[in-house]
Length: 347
Image (cartoon, rainbow, N blue to C red; front, side, top):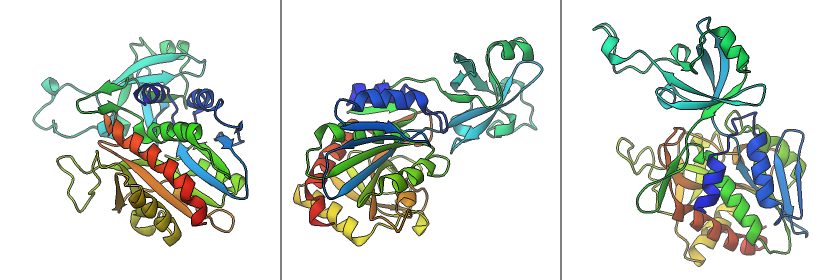
């Protein structure tokens, strides 16, 4: 699992620019799936098995990032966010600019050093996005242009997977390459008398877009989104904000975003909770007021699909230093394997 996750998080795929990560995932699933296709939206759709029922699993493959907004005369690059990228995750980080000509150029985001700040400057205040810039070492605007960088080019973190203690790892883009890793593994294990369709969706971070179009196409009988959850087992997060904890296994989502996202139907809840308890899986019920997954979009297509969402607790989400516990990912794969065998008892 660690090696697979390393490949996934170190392959870029900012929302709208998922080609490279899609190609990698296709290589990983083609030996296990009966068919693999890319739809018009860019979703990767892998099918396995056949029968009277179809179960759709959605795991978005896009990540948050930046886009080139303009280049200054001095050769510095101003950026805009793509998805839920915030200033605290940009300042003092190293990035890869994916140029229009196909190359990758390293850039760093920074601001005025504290040594040069006056008493009027607030050293504790994070610069606004419009004040931030990337420095690639260019001499002027023409130098940036010669590097192949254009307005609209995508920007992703330049970071690799790092190992922490006690089965923890850290990297950007665990949201949602963790779900992609689960999707790859369950395709390998699936062996039921119905069809499994795993959709590695695009543009989740900017409006759950790929899940919407792919669900209409797949037309499943049942659907599940697999995504990261908001782990609250760190200083600064209260139990009223999140009780999810790394090491607790798989989260079964009850309600997302105060009901503006998914409200898990009773038959979905029964299926997932019964499966977890009867097979003694490490699991917890999850509910918080912010955030929604692809499930919120899937359930509204056609005349509505019974849709659920499961999550892997993740610390420091939407940052360059997200943290997960590998055993939680493995628990999720084991849980889904048992859920596959019981699905037809509920739907």
